[in-house]
Image 1 (tube, rainbow, N blue to C red):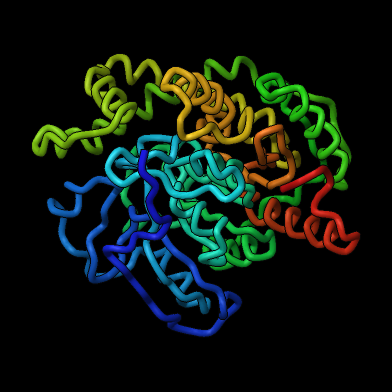
Image 2 (tube, helix red, strand yellow; image 1 turned 90 degrees about the vertical axis):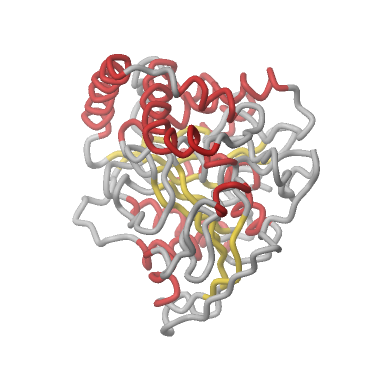
Length: 397
């Protein structure tokens, strides 16, 4: 598979800050699923731009960053129509992953993570439906936030499955991640979490070494540790998530696909084909199950607890990994990411763990609306690590 640049070079964009603010001096890029005035959204597929109009204004999230002093310097690569977690675009290639040079950066916010990891930008905005911020953050050794559902405006942002779509962002530093959150997130009256708990189901999917590191990491958070807890079979979350996501993806893009007959790469093609066959009855049954799981998770987490677990089971796969291995890891990863996705919770991935191949994220999952609290906790922990001249509570990249 050919390599590509993280930032799209054949459609350069630039926007100067509109006001000074907390983000002054920072440069950012945005996933090519967002409106940038004077250009056409690409959505990771060469036929998309030719069948859609030029944007006459920026997406709201871009304007919010410009209004706080940040400078937009480019658009970043994405997986096709964002319907992949691999970071391997059939048409454009694979963006570099500096943390694991022979591996993918993860997707679908692949270029956003790659640009940040390479130091091309200070932060990058992407989207997360099934893990598309959290997974690239983990694979590239970055901080990344998938916010509470609906917390950040999606106006001017392309969609895959509206029930799960969120706008998130990545950075190498926790203080920058928090500063971006101050620009994009609404203020919330949600109580500050006062305890943490290990999500045992997520620990069971991680390798032994990663799980041991996660158990050590939770003790560094500075909050009382409650007992480990279970939300039930993670496979059940994955199954209902994938059915509802697929149904919504076909409702969102089926008409365009039918009309334009685009060529999709392996994996994406099969997922859209399967999505086209889901019936209304099947979708309604899955939605009912999903609603039950969402309520279970929200009842369990309450309003005062942060759940912790590895973001993904292991470090990034090599670009040359066989398709069956990619599919296996995709299934395991979705078991981990579907919990926050189903329940609409914020999930912050920190670059704290690693295995023999490279970095593995350590996740904080909070109650709905606790996004700012999670960002502040990560910033304070990073500051404390810096003061003691340590990269993190456990060996980090």
